[in-house]
Length: 366
Image 1 (cartoon, rainbow, N blue to C red):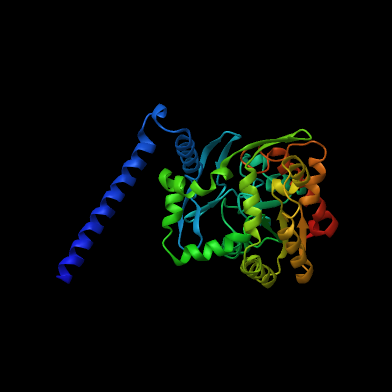
Image 2 (cartoon, rainbow, N blue to C red):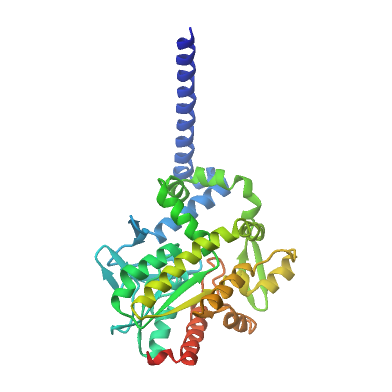
């Protein structure tokens, strides 16, 4: 009797599971293939966003150690509402490619980091690494990979950049890197199902954003001649979440930077940590004033921690926040309106600030 009851429950459970799975597949199929006039606006926007993201990341492939990497021998256009950029991997190594350098000479410098090092949104000639190379007359190789974090920066530095024997390395650190090291190790331990669904499933993203619908409401921000889209509630919640387990996540990040410093010092290469501020940090006073954010939101906590780390470790560190803020105060648009990366003007400001830092430190003679 008990066995029959268990069997009946298992059969009913299997039917429910099968029906649910069928419904989800049907909903996903409808979201992707139904005519636009039959699809709700939110679904259409998600579909377009995922399609655009997949096209923009078509040059990415999986990697066991790095999780993902850029394929070698790439040369194609990326279309975004804010820009059209050509991606060319000038440095093509076995199974991996990088935007590389533009002068064609030996590597004097190497830059590792995420999409801000990669210079998302601008062509090769306008990358901050390219502008820096031309102003110095020394080749600076761009090893940036979009969406990576400190764990990957350090691995790329050790595996690809340092073997090229540069005199100096630039280690780009961005506002969202606090989460990246933890996410990297969590993803490596498991099967990246959620990452796959996040990149390819409309239904999954609908459920994920269901309890954060207010986060998606975009506000048009405009002040001092600068304009961009801002998801105010999403930004507020992100800043609040940044304080959760802050010290634990910083420990994971700082261990990766420590390893990068150690590897650089071991081969006699000068290490420079670059702090890349988000547009929220650069325009925070205007944002807070216009949107009435509570003063308790501490957008500067990570920034302070990075500078404290530089002081304790006694390493070369360039905080690019003052240079970008100075130009922003001159009513200059430095970031793309929607995308959030530096535009051509932003890349120029960054390159000039790094060049001035190099001159002040005497690194140009390395």
